[in-house]
Length: 153
View 1 (tube, rainbow, N blue to C red):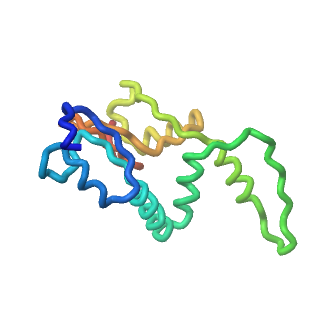
View 2 (view 1 turned 60 degrees about the vertical axis):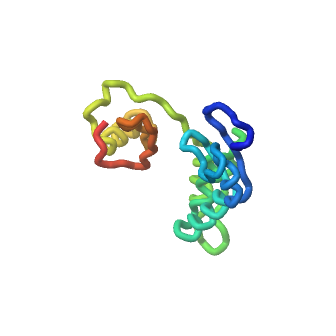
């Protein structure tokens, strides 16, 4: 990238192999990706997902369901199998496949509320599941906090 002598601006790149990051330096002889750049490496994502699947059974299913879409067709009622087990989990799973994730800015009315308390209230009143916050720190960097229970908004 340095050989092109491009002005400083955001580059969004997709790589297959992590070893190719060394070719992305903006300056001659400097083999580091600039902090302004967004680089997605497919092999790192695949390996990370495999590792999560080993550590957390069901993580792959969760991730795939979050990035996939399903039709709104009828969900067939399942009967119990002959071994006497229940297929209630299948109904719960198919219902969960219909859920979607949205981002939204919180109202100033929620300032001073803890994440855990706000999550509880939102679920009880409107059935909304709040599971993460995206915050911007004093340096202007954005961070995603997953279930920060004690965080005060």
